[in-house]
Length: 429
Figure (cartoon, rainbow, N blue to C red):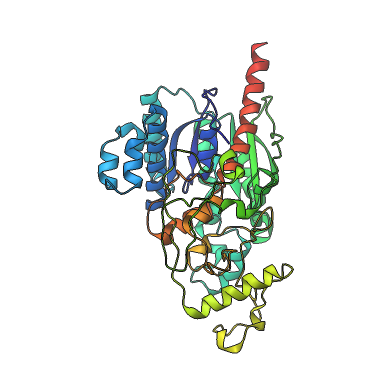
């Protein structure tokens, strides 16, 4: 999908921004970022790097960015050669009652410096592990049970931003498990909290595959708008693609476990990859490196891929030969080895667990018999190839797995933009 023109004069703040999937969609829709607030150091650095990309792209010269991606200059030199106003929009801070005043001051200073008199939209969603079904299933094995996790109540800090800045609309994203966390009490309190600071809200489940992403990813998207306004929950335009997941991989170099190759293959990129803007003629390939695998895992991967090729069958862990079994638990997680469904129109949800091992995300090519790379995971999430993730490979996988797919974010942004345009047009009549 090509970049939008600069038709929008609307701005936004991204809270709990992660690697910036939501921000990317709003930027592509023409919104201007005021600030991105993120506690994780590597994710904040990713946001800085992406902010630099958009600045350099707008100047019409990506030379400096390409020098950084190709390793000709180190990150410190790269950042040093950018205007400080570009990286200052990223606030690397953990949100809490104690830090809120200083974060507010930083945002107020940015608004004053850039001439923003008001905030139009706030987006974001607090870390979702405390709400997720998987997180709750693992809670009994953790030192701090999920019910006592302070992340359960970060929505109250989100509401503080709404109360202070009174944006015309907001978009709050989270996992579907938020509705049933702690017997539904958090969900009820969250909605009341958002309404009490001056907003009408509506909550709907959305799936990334309906926004053109080649992945099934169910999320709750709460949209709010100021009371007594003519705004409403957008009717997001459904975008279905006839592409299959393998179309994401055709122009990427083939790798064996442990190999790395950041040169595009000679294969022509698929129509899906070019039409969505995932790959452009200006891109430098990065992060196409994969984990090493021991021989036992390779044998299991080959079995998983072969079974899928034989009528889309799935591997049951208990059906493996004994010499390939290492887990004592034979009752739960029996699907712990899973292929990325290359010949389907969408694959299963990319998760941050990809940072721990790749068993649940096996590449569909039996000749490669490995788990997916960082770049392949990013493409499944619809991140452009120009998007560079900072930190270790482990951190990169976490950032990608936790992100809102940019194509989904773009659809949400377009819907909100249409609402704002519509109200403004009515007001001028």
